[in-house]
Image (cartoon, rainbow, N blue to C red; front, side, top):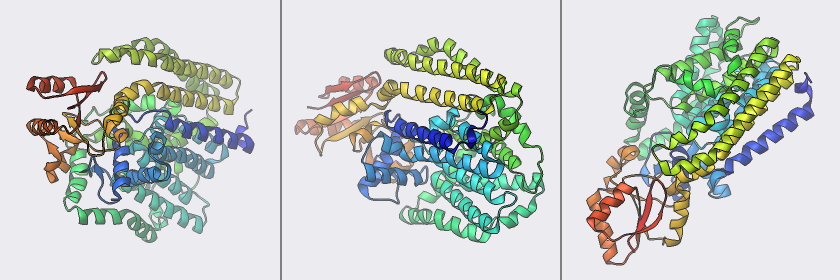
Length: 551
């Protein structure tokens, strides 16, 4: 049982089962706002309008990010129709592909067992699995950066033929170009900085002659440049907003109110690396040791993980998903360490998962306290508790079984057990969130609105913008007293928004003509409109919002 990686039948069977569960899980949950609803709606509008250059949200110009994910989601909708799994298909494929490519690269560079372990480690890391099941840009960027990292490792490994070196480096350049189209200049800046630091620390300056800079740059610009040129020609305001506001100001200024302490991402890595947290420090330390040969792949992986963590830690804008690109590197470092780790260290990794599972069992009863701001949602969190409880039991049982395997020197079974326990635990946590996520998305309200809607029915969103409801309604809404993320676009097209008085005037005019209109609003806005005496009827409501009509 210590040579599972040598059994092709077992490896391919495990991969097939993993892929089936991974892809099936994409469609079992509602699109939770804000990110999932936003990027699904942008793609829906792109497919509906046929405009593949100017990205829009709710019909308003929206240039915060490049269009790669919107393109891919729009193609998914065009091929398979609108739905949850279609909206998550691109990120799901990026996450799945990242696991496969990471395992393949590790096997080519470090050996077959390391490749097997690397795929298991990445395919069960909490943050990677969760992000691969969510329609967000972080996995899209990370998938493309994984292509760049893995292709670089294969190309530069000692013993690579000139043809291999050229072809894999071209793939690396293509990966960086796609990363730029996924989320901006960090797709080039981060790999470039890692390469610079690697050449300085390893004294391998000759690596710059092995990058195929000429062909690589031509390929990079051929992929990355056309959209930026076309969108700038159609929208002259876009370059300044995207390159200055979304890059420079977002990184250095606290304009998005997403700042956090310098150790923010270190705290995020604690749960994010589970169930491999117990070997992460040792894997990093092991990675800085010089190995025979010219190219030092472990050192490059350490620099990749540490620098990207430091880079985003310095940024004034912090969100958990920013750290996702480090996980393939950490998976490969963990794999190379686990391959030769002592029994004690493998037992420590298993024991930590066991402790986390037991801790989860203790913490589950406190979950309902999350409903303090919305007491009516307490029942939803109580219904979620059994799922989290089961996840904690699986983690504890997996840790205990892995601990037994580690004591009995069953190396491959130890790693496999940790991976399966980690993967199943995350899937349980995600699946059980569905009732709460469904309410957050407002999908039930959207379905109740549908029978009352006509093609020309105006829908107003008063004081809010429900990121997922517009996708489920399959139409845009008229914003009332709400700018927020639409500020840049509404400055270009202020006629696409109303103030409260303008809304009341339109509502009363439509009511006088017996023309139906509907509005989405919260209780405070409802009370304000009631005090103004406008004609309205509540169509549907939940704990966070109401839907009204004038007829």
